[in-house]
Length: 271
Image (cartoon, rainbow, N blue to C red; front, side, top):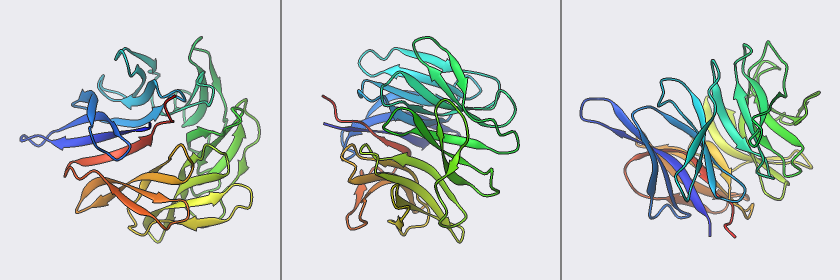
């Protein structure tokens, strides 16, 4: 079985908002709350065994990365450096998190070893914003978003650092990569004419196919079977969850709560 994690945003009567990190069945049913906060919660991500969630919380007045065990509720703050602490992404072996940190100035990609707390810097590009790293299934390489060429595009780099290779050339705006479990496809947010769509790029051929048409689409997350992509979009000013097949033929809306829902993440298959 698989689960979804997502963030809901509920307005209070006094004009403030409350945020909740929730986990549901794969169709959006039976949501349960993992964390509630008066401050934003961002970027939930599942460990490869589906037992832990990483996320960014502002509950302490600044961005902080937490890892929470699903069974016990126990959680640890793993990144609370000066500046930005964002975009945690699990390595396929579950031992490391890729992070975006600005503790050295600009946003850069780092890798954190969870058992030891050892932190390694991956990118060194003081002029650019590097962010949103995710791992390739080989556990050795990362893809990330960078504006080092002037506009945001997706690049690939060794998790040990070194020279980055640009992967996206279609259009002037490509961000928020997610890699399919089979390593063949990359889901991205593709910008065209001020609108944002979910697209998929074949990593072997480089071919890009735009899958959605609403123009306000974000946060793509592959299903564990690599055939569907979960994403967030907007309807009537509210965030909703949707899914699309990698060939663009099947479109689904998930959940009908009337609540603002964003930042979806599809869990691995639980053994």
